[in-house]
Every structure is written in C-alpha cells, then in structure tokens.
Length: 190
Image (tube, rainbow, N blue to C red; front, side):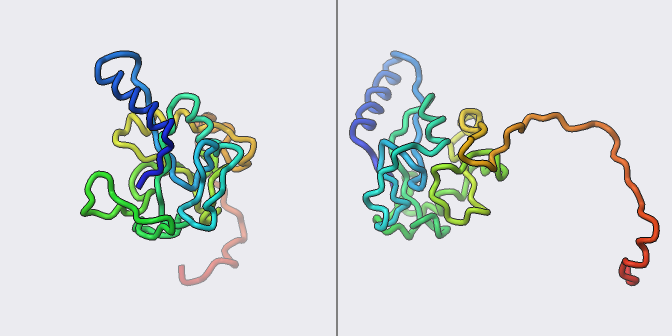
C-alpha cells in the first residue's frame, strides 16, 4: 500500500521513539496519494507509464503541508485514479493496512471531500478535471480539520481556488419579482 523513502522513514522512527519516551513535541506525519506531485518521491499515479516521473515541484497542497507535517511516503491507488476498489494498480497489489482480508475500497472513498474550488488541484495528476477535488483522509475529525486549515489557501496556479471563502453572506431579505406577461411562455399543464 505504501511507498516509503528510507531517510523519511528513519526520521519517522526517531520521532516515534522520542514521542514514546516523552521527549520533544509531537510531530504530525502524513502520506500523499501517488497522484500528487512530490519532489521527494517519484509520482507514478500507480502507472508504469510514469515510472520515472520525478516532479520538480510539490503539488500546492503538499507544499502547504510540508511546512507543518512530515511526508512519510506515497499511497498506491487504482491506476490514474480510475477505479473504485483500489485493486488495479499497474505497480503492484494494494493492501488494506488495517485488515488484509478487506479491500482498500478506493483511496478516496472515506474522508472529507471539500467543495470544488476550496483546495488547489495544482500538481495533482487529473482523472476527470471537472470532477477532481483534493480530499483528506484521517482517523479523527480533528486531524481532517487541522489539515484543511493548512492546505485551504488561494493558489495562483489554480484559478478555480476560492480567494475570498470567508466573505459574509448578506442577511438582507431577498426580493422576488414577477415579470408580467411571462405566462404565455409557460407550459399550460403546470
């Protein structure tokens, strides 16, 4: 299920051992789905076609996360995210880390999928551009909320990201107008 980079994995082991004996602050770690561009790991979208693809930059959301969290590796997905079971990766079989008797069920079938435009898709290999959104998978709602706060920012490379998400909604009463003479254009069976 996971692709790991040795140096990052060793760093994680040190963090785990320090946390186990109560030293230092708790470090937050994550894995990125393998269709997100990452400078520190190859990005294959689980396809042999992209076997040697090493992006020169991180996906926008990975860059945002990198400031506060440690990327441990990449998760495998259906090839080019085209499937729902998680069983069709050209790079090899995908295993459920919690229960090997169960399928993974697709890498994005559980979690938080924000509205279109709230998170940048810049640096994410698309499956269907009009439907693709960045989602967050975690074990706790508080973790999802924390990650969302880090990565939900305007990206100048994705013109569809919302710049002013926190604008106030008008509390004025809406006015409804009736256009005179429109009845002749309406169906008669309504």
